[in-house]
Amino acid sequence: MDRYVNVPLSEKDAHSLKAGDYVYLTGTIYTARDAAHKRMQETLDRGEELPLKMENNVIYYMGPSPAREGRQIGSAGPTTASRMDKYAPRLLDLGLKGMIGKGKRSKEVADAIVRNGAVYFAAVGGAGALLSKSITSSEVIAYDDLGTEAIRRLTVNNFPVIVVIDAQGNNLYETATKKYCRE
Amino acid sequence: MRTVDVSVLTQNISEMCIEANHYLSEDMKTAFTEAQNREQAPLGRQILSQLQENMEIAEKDMIPICQDTGMAVVFLKVGQDVHFVGGNVEDAVNEGVRRGYVDGYLRKSVVRDPIYRENTRDNTPAIIHYSIIPGDRITVTVAPKGFGSENMSRVFMLKPADGIEGVKNAILTAVKDAGPNACPPMVVGVGIGGTFEKCALLAKEALTRPIDKHSEIPYVKELEEEMLEKINRTGIGPGGLGGTTTALAVNINTYATHIAGLPVAVNICCHVNRHAVREI
Ligand code: SF4
Image (cartoon, chains in turn yellow, orange):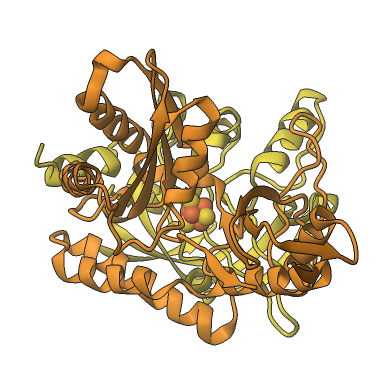
C-alpha cells in the first residue's frame, strides 16, 4: 500500500505501517553511520547528552557524496544497516522510531523494534542520485570532523522507502524472498 | 621502447574515476532493460525502473550513481617496452585518484589505518594491481568498488574432492548470505583455482569483463549460465525485496592450481558495477 507519512514519526503512524508498505516520508530526519554511532555510544557510556534527541526521530544510515555548488547534497542512498546493529537497540530504547538503511537486521534489533513500536525502512540501495532529489536541505549538526560520516539534519519531501520490519515484527525480506523462491 | 610520462597516467586516471562513477557501461544498461522485461515481481519491476531512472539522473545532473563512490581499484597492464619517466608510477596513480575524487565531488571513503580509521580525505591510496604484458601499450582499468557488496565477498578453500558441485555451493552460499546487503541485482565475479590470493584477484578481474561476454572455456561458460539461473531462482530479487532478478551476470575466471587444492573466491558486486577502461 502507498502511504504518505510525516517525520518525526508519531506513535500512531509507526504502529500503522506494515511490512511491504511503500512510504513517502516528508519532514525532518537525521543521518548517522558507523563512526557517528560509535561516538553516540561513547557519549551515552559517559552519561552525557546525545547531539540529537532520539524520541520519535528517524535515522538514515547514509553518508553522502559532496554537494556540487548550488546544491544541497550529493548522491545520497542508504548504507548497509547491519553494521549499526550493535548500537541500534540502545537508541530504540531511547525512543528512536525509525531507521532507514538497506539489508538484514539482527534478532536483537528486530526485538527492539517490536518492543518500542518502531519501524525499519529500506531505501533502494544504489539509487543515490535519484534519492537525492527528495532531499531539500542538509545541514551538519554534529561531528563535522567525520566528513561524510557527520550527523546531518535533512529535510525530505516524499522520500521513498519501503517498510521491511514493522512494529509487529513482520519482515518483508523473509516473506518476499520466499514468495519468489523457485529452488 | 616507448617513453611515457607518468603525468599521462595521472590525467587519465582522474578522468576515469569521475567517468566510472557517473556512467555505467552499455552492457550494464542493456542488462537492466532486459531484466526489466523479465522481472516477475511488481515491486521488483518498480525498483529496476528506479535504478534506470537513477542512472539517467546521474548522467544528466552529474550526481554519482551511488554515494559510495568506492575504493579505487586500478589495474595497470603495462607493455614491457614502455619506459616511464617524470616520476614514480604509484604516486602518479594516487595523484590521479586524488584529483578525480576531490575535483569530481566523489565521496572520500578511505581510512589510513584499518584500526585507527582516520579518513585520508582524498580517497587515496588506491588498490593497484600491476601486470607486465608484451608490447608498448598500457591498459588502465579503474574500477571503484563499493563496500556494501565487497563486505559480502568470500574465499572458500575447497578440497579437490568437492569438485564442481562444491564450487556451485560456494557461489550460492555467498550470494544467499549477501542477499539484500549487496544491493541486488548483483554481478557475481568468481575466481576458481590458483592460490589463496590469486583466486581473489581472478574474481575481482572477472567483474571487469563485460557482462554480455562469456568465458571462452566451454564448461566455464556453461557454469556461468547455470549459476545465473540458479541465483535468479533464490527469490532475493531487486533490492532483496523479492523477485526473479537477483543477479545480472556471473563472470568466472579460472587458473591452474595445486594438486591438493580448489580455491574459490566469490567477489560480489552490486548493480553499480563500475569500470572505465582506456588504452594508452
Ligand atoms: S553495494 Fe554498491 S550500490 Fe550498494 S551502496 Fe555500496 S556501492 Fe552503492
